[in-house]
Amino acid sequence: MNLPQNPSWVLITHLLCGAKKKEINVIHQIMNPTQQQRQWTHYEVLHLRTVQSTEFRDITPEVQEVVDHAGIRTGFVNIQSMHTTAGILLNEHEPMLLNDMKRMMERISPAEAYYAHDDLDVRTVNLTPEERENGHSHCRAMFLRSTEMLNVIGGRLQLGRWQRLFFVDFDGGRTRAVTVVAFGLTIQRPYGPRPEPL
Image (cartoon, rainbow, N blue to C red; front, side, top):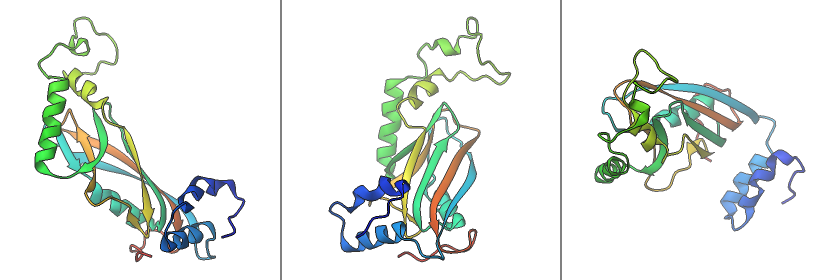
């Protein structure tokens, strides 16, 4: 395959190593877009209402809807938590496993422990009228990423068999914001119906 010299595609050339014929065809389409294909970037904010103090919210369907709305066939989607007491997690959606993760976080950073962040007699920075005692939430969130980036192939999130995308709130019971940016190639008018997989 004659690869284009455009440096913007250097990032994905490593995919050719050991790729199957179908995958190479997909990469060839990325690197040699037809006249109907165009680069597109789409941005949305997901507003999520959490209920529990620690909550694992599966946002895979919402993120897929953003990709559908953008009309991206091949590209990437970036998901970002806008909070310092929450994170983004890619893992299995199995109830007992989620409870295991919750208990692990409670052992690492117990809510009943002392946190200087919660000592309003001495703390003077970043105070708000509705300030919560959430030092443990910040400490738990440091173990998760604030962003995740996923591949989009054939208009679908590229996920492993058991992979799901979670917004994990360690200071729940309120409305939270997650930003999503989808970017890549589309061969249809954006905001139309989801394209068929390749």
